[in-house]
Image (cartoon, rainbow, N blue to C red):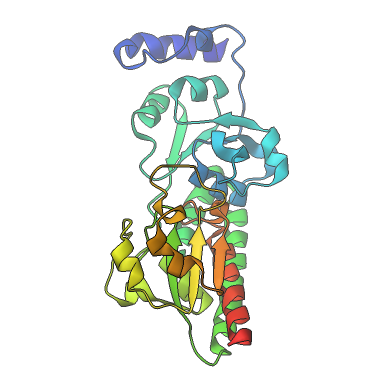
Length: 289
């Protein structure tokens, strides 16, 4: 009943801004799910990394989609999305949003007395560490955050040692299903460099993400092609690399690594998994060279 009264007061004060809240959200018996709720795919990875399973109230609606790398047990938890009605009904201790995703919904939750956390933008491993620390502090799980960072650093150190043992660093080109690529200042570039490769797109002076450009793709000279979102991404008419002949020169390379989309929908704790898969592809390329 306390939650019902809280929501009723909130609705009265913000009626013009909350027309999307369904009547049933205000009904008696709205359940309270103490714990942490994730409202986005990116937030899922961080919540899973620093929150005990029993303290997770909800994960994003994408948790059971191919683009998620969440463990099987997580498919049984409640699902959430950036919708005030849904999150008010769940009433978690803390709702975690991806970068720039809290917006109006986050403000409405805060006015209703619910706590909100939004991840900072991340495009490298330093920013991943910062997000882990901040979320761990917000949830009272600083020890788990520190443990996650220690594991991340240990795995990065192993990748660095593997890279140092190789005769040379291979030239690597990234290609998404849309035909775009990634230059300097992207988490894909961070993963390629951590694996011990040279990002040929960044080497050419490109900064940030690129759009589909068949002519640009034809000029790329790479030892290894890294792809993602071809098999487990969302179907779209924009996925030109699946169909355009100009990309076949890259896709038909024998040295190719396809990274599961769930490992890097954003720069999150699983980015190091992607870097390790790229490093495995580098080792295979070197053995076959």
